[in-house]
Image (cartoon, rainbow, N blue to C red):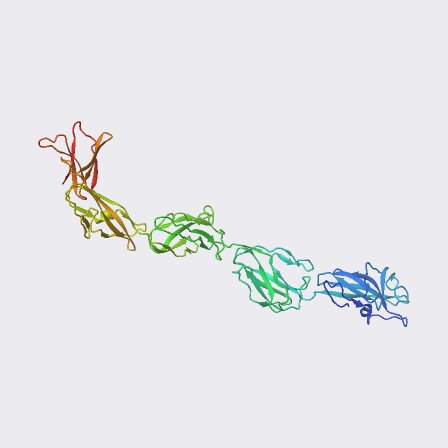
Length: 528
């Protein structure tokens, strides 16, 4: 048989005819020379050629048959120029030729054979094996790909899409330049991937040039795997085409946007955005119901949490993503939110801070009748101050004297204002409130009402509004007053009770006489 030839070796030297017939030819003619008449070839793996000048030039054997056989001498050569695919076995069939007739390199009819003819009666065959060439590189095949030795890429098909977290098998082949498996290779191979979260197989040996390994991608998108020869770094590695990796079923909630920009008195400047993900952090709606509510709760820090705290992330609503719009926290301090949905792992926000805001101390206005001691209830005074953080406010201090020099005192319940002895006055003094962290100064304005001659000494404003007497009275906060009316102040006036009320914190109360009689009308407010 012929010496095996490597796939793709188009310059091999072939074999001498003498090597093919050695020990297989005898001739009754003493001194006959040796040769063969090639009757037929099988060449599925390449093309048969011959040379009559020691291999300097080669000619194709072409189509031969019993009646058109190619004559070759023992010193001539035959070779197969193989294709690029290993594994085939080709052959030639021939008769022995004693060279007593015919010309080498020419065709002759070998139908008549045996006896004293130039051709043997029997025929023989010689085979040649087409083997893989030298090991030069690795080949990685993924599901959906099929090896195709002898082609430019060495394979057909394209990788099948995979699901994140699901293992699949890959095949590694040690190949020659034409992608034929080199069965003698037992090198150790190792894997890397574009997916930094992939589960890759441990390093392992090839067996007869082949190996099967399990790979698991975890990151959705287009991912690749690469196999390298760890035994011989000179051998070329192979990287797969990008494999489409689809997200797995939903398993958890995740924050796409963290809450931020939180300040008292207003919604967060950066509202949280939530999405459904699989167990590997990929955005996913696989297995998501048409409706699934996501609720947010304050799990660290003081509240309450205000705003819309539940949104529908289902496929018929948010389709896997919800954006909160008006969440708000007023109390100062460090906070953390937790987002929950049935059947999914919670998402917990990073901690964030609501800064303390100083309280706002507004102008506190009080009006009192003349010559009435002025006691301002501290609780009423504090209603004029606000705190965006919702902190409880306390009165820290008041100024010692007013603008007009009145003495200001306080106890645990009241602020005491000493009314100047001279007539009407509008006066101011300062007050300081604290939220426990910081303080702010505001002003109190005291108006002492006029005391004109007559009975309307505590009427501070009076007018006709839509034809009805409308007036404002000044009183002492918390005290009861009766509004009375008379039409004649001469002699002993007869006063009619119209309305009873308690003076509010500011000391002013209002009255409208809905059924006034005709004529002169006089009104007063009497403390009872």
